[in-house]
Length: 487
Image (cartoon, rainbow, N blue to C red; front, side, top):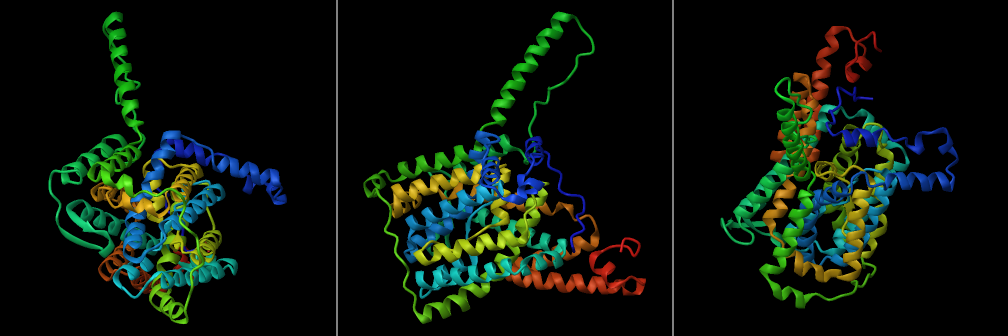
């Protein structure tokens, strides 16, 4: 395997370590029988709430990506929002039950970008691109080729893709905060005013609130916990201890607040305040689910302009990067590239026929949900139940509410997701690995193409490996970065 598993990213959250030590039924000899009882126990363990507020808060970590893309396509290309909510809600529940971690379900970004930039790329082309992309990923998964790709791609190249994606999220988030956005046209309209129900001050206050509550992601503890008083009278020591306990309780209350959930609820309230007439535009009941009609032209255009650009991004960010990130954040819960490729493929081979937005997993969504406290499959299952309920109760009329949602708040949520993903790259300990990673990142960002960045990163990696031919090492030692004795 090209990964030599350098020192993994330390997980400072004891709760996460506690979760990863839970026995996984799929790894025990008894699981070979795949009895219904074992499957039920595994699903039950995967959907356990390790922290009710933490899982609820973590469910908000991916909305900064999900809402802008789905809303833009709903308004600009008549995407069936109700159908998309229903299918993605079911995907969330199933993936949470299968994987037991906050595995995200995100819109396919390259297909969405093409649809928003090309007025002739409508719903049939979007769905055709999703079906074709899902079909390729499903074949790569069931044949085992995706696992082979995962084994051969060096860690430093994966980190380059992750860093590029994280920085891209962060830059987009800053744009959302600073500029007024026309989401259907994906354009900035000018500077955002300081004050107002979607002003800069609101976004800055939300950002500061999340930083105070969540910090940089570490487990917060009272600074006075465990401090001993070496002298003084007993009465004074008792008073000091009572004071320390009060401060410790206050800190625990503040640091346990579901910050992202509170910010999202604030955004929903402000959406109604900004335009209270939106209440009269709501229609109860699910949207009609119909099979999309495809033409030969739609299949062709969907493949050329949608599937081909999306495939490299899905392979790298939805499968390869998610596999590595999950092993970093949840040691002991490694998932094969095969399983992730198959689940992404099946999601699109089913839902896209009925008009649900093509979806995939994503390293950014996983990082964002982890950042805000998601630690189990219950996090995304809870989000899935909410999506399913909204899709069945409000259907596409939910778009009227989301259109009034403060974009600055979405930018704040997206910013933390991007930074969390980018910070995963801090385990590149050698100059050579860092060099490859940064080349890959720079090309991905400037060229706006993960595939181009990946190609350049692989070329640089191979050239650096070839320099080791003069050291009398076998080829396997050069590629795998091992010494001859290890080989």
